[in-house]
Length: 199
Length: 433
Image (cartoon, rainbow over all chains, first blue to last red; front, side, top):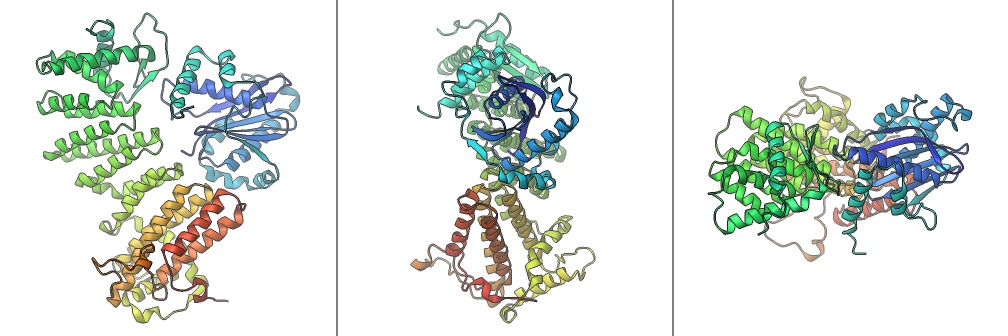
């Protein structure tokens, strides 16, 4: 399905990343799963931003999902989680656009101390809804041209983004952002998927 | 035996059944990953969704299965307390809709008149919400529908049933990628319930939205191909004429820029008339005030309109979502329809049929679908103009090693080897300027 699930703006500190704003569209998930899915998407967004270098773009494929991340030179970071059919170029163009707009509204000096509650940037919800249809991207061709010059690093699993010695299972287990139910949800999903490969 | 291993089972089953009775709008069932049981009911209910905590699933199913199988073995099913039995069967099909025996017992009770078919459809839809790809569920669903539609129904009831079926199959298709079971069910409804044919144009529109959102799935495109194959039964003048008019105009646009330099008109009067209608359409000469496409005079017009619309839709999707093979496969289908139609148009007048019924093709022609003389058929010439443009565009726009280029070149090869044209296309066109 051509779908955008989540869009988040984060600030990348030296050690960790902190949220500035996030928007989700999880209508396609069943009711009891939505909470866990949202927590998990937030967890993945944060984890990936922390492992992306400054001034770099990455796209990570994980199953049927794609996670696109861009950390700007000034450490403002944007993440989009979409499904694998959503055009990759459009996702990256959209991140650039949203980050530009955010930086215009809030000066860089305010980023390190800001929290999600203190920021009102509702455009992010509008964008998430509007760009469900990638045709809207036609208006963004100018950014697109600039984008062509940057290289997007593509990874085929989340594991590939993690630093040496790190394991996703461990990160999930020790994460504070995930509830017990979300961790159980992760384990179940892991179990269900693993029966497909006989490894 | 196994009966008393899980004493809470009957209580849980009653809870589930009560929710079904209370909430007529229930639409979802799911298993919630709570692996440790607390001392409270594992049955959840919110926003028309029924949830069951994971820890009890295994025990519950074992309980249901053994109880039902014991009753069956001892042939006591019909004597068992109906309320107990309906609870067991409900729990059973929810947890494992792939168990044919459970559905068969339900069938038996429907035949006996103890289960109501409409309730059965509802329960079945809920099982599909968790297991959207369960073939057994769909088979049972069709069995119920067949029984219901065998008797005369009020038209309001019938249309609400059709509406419900279309919704259920869409839900199932949305929830599981490449769910051919769901689309096959939809096809079954469209072809086995005569009244569903009234929905043809609605379906045409809905499926367009769906395929534009699921560009890597051929399952939805396959349904569209099913609809395309029925187009000739739906060639009456509708509001769609207007919709097709604009796509026909852009489809015909290559005619504007070049003269179709050929003596095709000598060969075929049908083709000639069609050509004239096309030219009229482009010049906006309105011969019929009602319908800009003049579809009543020339019944090929609407058919070409449908195909042109589809061709342009696929072109658009291919550009928007590069690198999805399903779209190219669908394009081949559309081309093949065009091909057959071109043949039909040119054969209509010359009366010479290329294919002799029953006589096997010569060996060299087995791979290809017979030649078409594009001198005689400007329609095919037009189609080829579009293909040329698309392939060129894809190759220029994307890098050499990209998947999109690979698919485009593969497509070109397919056209050349399967849909053979007698001469090189470009030599028949002359630029106007």
